Length: 130
Image 1 (cartoon, one colour):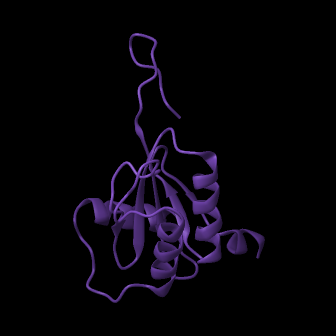
Image 2 (image 1 turned 90 degrees about the vertical axis):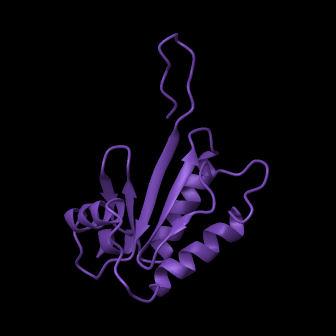
């Protein structure tokens, strides 16, 4: 995940993911459209989705973001949390276990996972298997 710099050394860059609480039947294009709206600063006025709240509480229980202590996986803290999503900016050098935990918790909370590096969207495992 850490690309080589021009001189052949490794340069650290963040690894950015977000998890999204969209209605049942949402497609990867729906997630990408929601990401665009967020990046444009357009967040709807709505109550926080319980799935997002549950995910945020679980991930920050394992990896606190307020404050982010030594060894934190978060390059940006506190995490950006909105009513329908949580943005996770990780150090490229974070442990693989952090990514596995994010993926597992996204599935447990029925959230779609957006990989900002390549625009991939991963539905929760329950949606894949049904």
